[in-house]
Image (cartoon, rainbow, N blue to C red; front, side, top):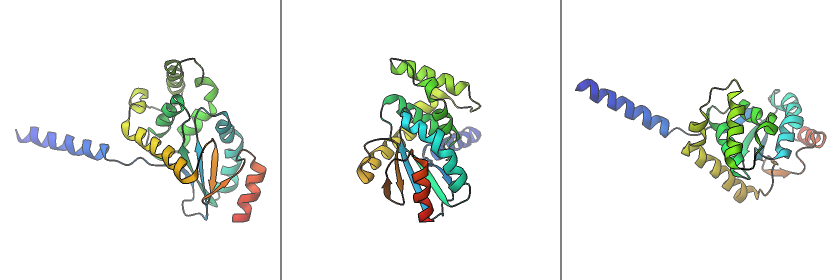
Amino acid sequence: MKKILLSLFFIFSVGTTISNAEIKPIMEGNTYAKVKLIVFESLTCSHCANFHKNVYPSLKEDFLDKGLASIEFRSFPLDLAAFNASKIAHCKNDGNSEVLHYLYLNQDKWIKGSTIDDLNKNLEKVLKDSSFSLNFEKCINDKKIEDYILEDRINGAKKFKIEATPTLIINGETFENPTNYKKLKKYLEKLI
């Protein structure tokens, strides 16, 4: 009987710890850097995918890897498919951005279909084709992650008046045209 009670106590306390765990933001760079970027994005947004494919690599090389800046990727899903993809991006809950980047780089493979079921099947297939070991159903049904993403979206709309994606915030100020790296680089260099 003692063993059963101890086992139940252990299961309950582990379950409680896991269910009360915080969701970590997806971030890169030096968190203590003077320049802090926040990008609000939707995983079905082609301009956001463009940011990840054409701006992010240079931003990473010139500023993030050198410890001159940090970036936080915040969810601002514009539709249900983007909402589900955001849950996948946050599912590991390790703050790492590799799943997020993977989803953007493969966006054209999973945003096909006329129903949310079609989109989910494509998203699940892209995930299975990856090296990530994530349980699709578990990820898209995680209520804590869901709440975290919705909170990101609400805060973005309230605090920064986000209406479109991607929206880039640099040290609290909105930066126009985040997909133009040349202008972004000049702006960031002035801040450093």
